[in-house]
Image (cartoon, rainbow, N blue to C red; front, side, top):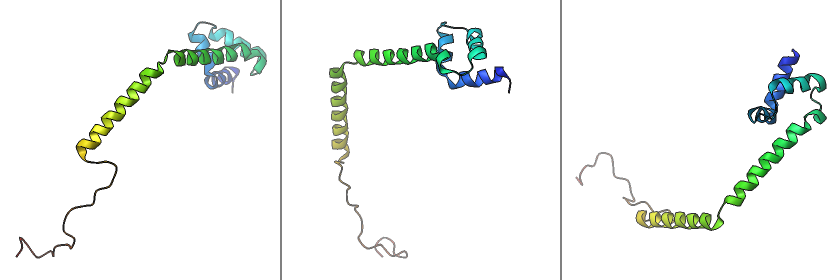
Length: 114
């Protein structure tokens, strides 16, 4: 396998590198040159891997800060009320109803109470 093919496999296994190129922090040429010189040595890639990890953690913490827990609780309560209403309307309260119908099966050759 050529060095170029090895780099492609390496890049596919590390989406942080793809993210760095999309965010214009690096070019594919720069990344390939680093790979050509250092290979897969972690010390050469620490800047890219750490930045990606801290960015994703920062994004996650920002999302969590923006969530209004009171609003979430209101939505949960509304959903519970809606499910309760559906259960009342359908007559299903979680119990399995007993089937209605004849206890003894009707003979095959008997029609309309002959």
